[in-house]
Image 1 (tube, rainbow, N blue to C red):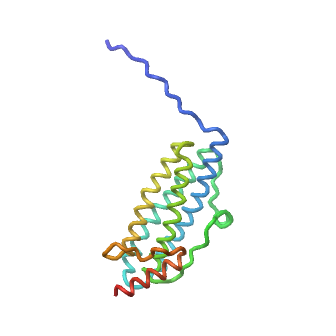
Image 2: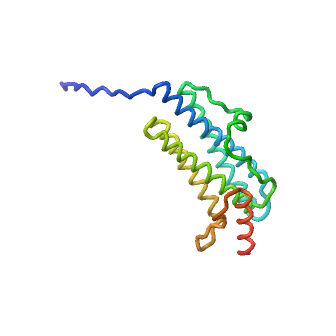
Image 3: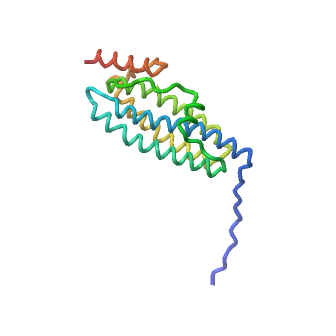
Length: 192
């Protein structure tokens, strides 16, 4: 007969109310950004025109679906922390720190140039949030790092359309969506 060994008792330290509130605040900002990104991606999906329309149109939809999944996971984590997530359009607009997406109906390359800027901003802020939660809450940190995997992959998909065969990125140096869109279109005309 085998003797059963006692396993060590594992205790996972709980977040204090203050720590949980801080994590929820960090996540709320990410929730707004991800909701905005999902809407922006769908807007681009509807408004791209010109050469490579179908490729870009179809590339965007899986990104929308994945980002919507990130939105849900983020909101559920906020709720798990005991804080009600705010996902209304008014809350997004009132609390966001960025301008609304600036392109309407435009060429695929213009939208991809602008989307390069959008992804750079979302990824940079997501990385900061991941760093801010690394010591505070490993569960939230893991969630954010998982999001970064997909966000960076989608950004690579976008940038593949903006790179020359020599590896030069057409949007280099741009600091706004419209500036990136202009640079991408200009580079595309030079290559044509």
